[in-house]
Length: 115
Image (cartoon, rainbow, N blue to C red; front, top):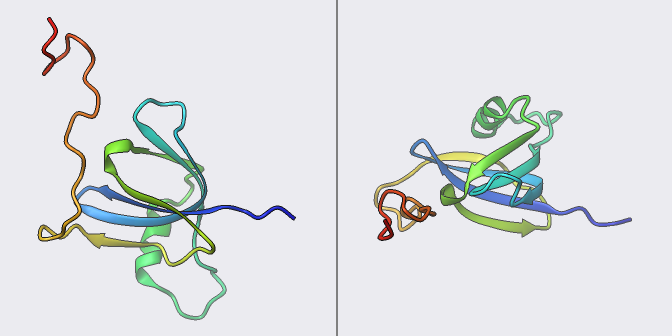
């Protein structure tokens, strides 16, 4: 039986840092976006309910596929098994920062030296 891939994706969104797990991650069809499919959450049958993971499940309820802007992705790891998805506040004192904007400037566009 083929082993299934599991990816941990950490990204910035609206002043928070999200950590989610998914079975498929790729560059997608839209330029500048990372495509994340088949999100994985903890088992619903467990007695202990984690409010942080519950919040992410509500956030991504009904989502088949999500597209993350390339500049918001902090890290993508392939892991052996999924962990607990979580959301945390982006700490101003943290050493993690987003890439500067814009990632791509078309020739002749704003900020371009070509005219």
